[in-house]
Length: 217
Image (cartoon, rainbow, N blue to C red; front, side):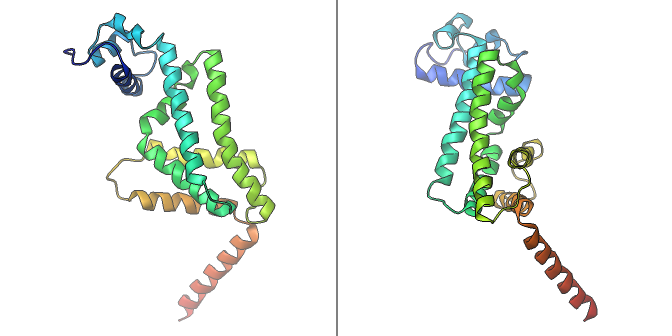
C-alpha cells in the first residue's frame, strides 16, 4: 500500500485505530500483526510506536473507548426520563440501534475480552458492570413502582442484554425489517418479559375472548 499520510499526528492515529478495528474484526486479535497494521495504514512498522505503545494497548484503547462511548450515549438517551417504563423503552431503543450501527466494535469488545491482560481485563469488566448497572437500576425502580415484576434483577439484566445483543449475529442492513420495526419488536419482547403477571393474564384473557367471539360469529 502506498504511503498516503504522514507518520505523525491525530490523523494517523485515527487511521491506525480504524484499521485496527477492521483487521481485528476480520482476522482476530492474535492473528493481526503490527506489520500488517502498518501496511494497512501506509506507514513503516516502526512508525506505529509514535502512536501506540503495544498491540495490547491498542486493543485495550479500542475496547475501553467503545464502552465509554456506550455509557456516554446511553446517559444522553436516558436524560430527562423518569418513568421506569419510558426508561426501559429508551434503553432498548438505544442498545439495539447502537449494536446495529457499531457491529465491529461490539464484536471486538465481546470476543476479544479474553485477549486482554489481567489489568486491562479488570478495567473493561468494571466498565461493562457500570453499563449493566444502568439497566439493573431501571428494573429495580420499576419493581419499586409496581410496574415491573422481576424475580431476580441480576438474572433479568443479563437475560435482557443477551437478547438485545444477540441481533449482532443475524442483523444485516437492507433486510426484510426496518430498524424501527426491529426496535419495536425488541421493546415488546423486553417489556412483556418484565410486565406483572396480572397484566399478562388480563391480556391473554382478552385475546382469548376476542378469538372466541370471532369463532362464534
